[in-house]
Length: 531
Ligand code: C2O
Ligand code: CU
Ligand code: CU
Image (tube, rainbow, N blue to C red):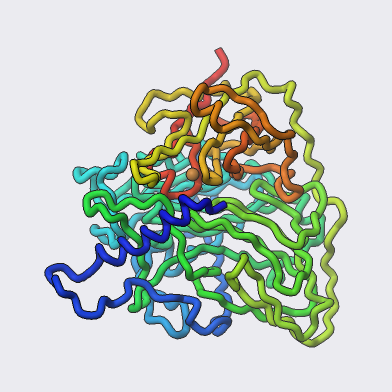
């Protein structure tokens, strides 16, 4: 996935960042202190995996859907705090929900609506480098702005966290979540226009689980045997603070992607988890700004994937490894019973993500890994009333650095071009002539991946002629369920099919590489009523 151009670009970026951050006024700087530490030199597996608390409602409020009933209301405040991300690092300043990162976990039932008051109690100044050239982040805008989006939630537009619906410190917004959707792992995160990448990097996200009767009936590992693993990468200064890299242009600090060498699980660098020799269910979220993970066990143990972004797969898929892009989720069952007394490392290429210390004791395990999970009716292409051809475009400067990314050649502020009709099905054909894999996410809907297919990039970029050069490849087994985020692979056309249902109104679709999203790789779309 990393081409030569990208590799060169990234290495030069690292050096220019070093030069730019020399102390001001020191022309003959003595030994330049490194800006970031090499986290691989920190001791591994010395911190236990933290488990974020489950949030509890604070009161009940009238439902906006039906004022004669009251529904549980939660309150989650965004605050600045310090936390230890590693035994041997000083506490790190972060922003998060409540008092930790990741934020508290919501654990709700399908069909049971809730309200959440999201409160911005952050300071007035940002601590990460804002680029005022980006849409919505001009010098005339308040520095600290947040708006919360429930990723994967089927939510009305006024509660969806439209990027321009942000609030400043001291304000709050109460959103309504109907939870009228199948059991799955969603996540909530900031979505503020032009600074989303910084707010999420600062720590503004958490997990939101929806449960239902189908899931209950499967007897999957539960309680303390069900654990969320929120994975994200960061760079750290020698003082243990978050480091967000900048370009070599002081007035335009935006960089095309950020990759940290420190990988956090639930807010700790390379943690460990003591496990019993039995089955566990792991709910994995890639909450990174830009990094894709290629997850596997170092000892080759099987990962049984039972679900994806929008819920359970039809049947478990036994995998040695799989790829998870920013924004995607994976629901896994791992059986440690054949590994009593072992220490197993979950890795991504050269990175040791975390360690599982399997107890030597034999235990009874009454949970199951059923052979059938939840039937998924395959959406027929013939249902689609419209097919949209949408390109993913990257623009480079003279030295081949990406400077801008657009969806279908259009900027955020241009008039809305995607207006699907409520209760109709469409196919979105995502043409990716760039060198990057872009994880494309649509708000409101769940979709199925139809296929991916290689095409002739040159004839597309020069003549807008779409010529396929390979066969249509079906989705990977771990993606063959309901999705809300799809890897649009480089040099390929990726087709998805979706039914627009639930609400009319204005939503967004975007690349989930947050640096891309903040630099125009996001567009509004509108679900309109049938006439
Ligand atoms: Cu995960 Cu538009 O977001
Ligand atoms: Cu979303
Ligand atoms: Cu992208």
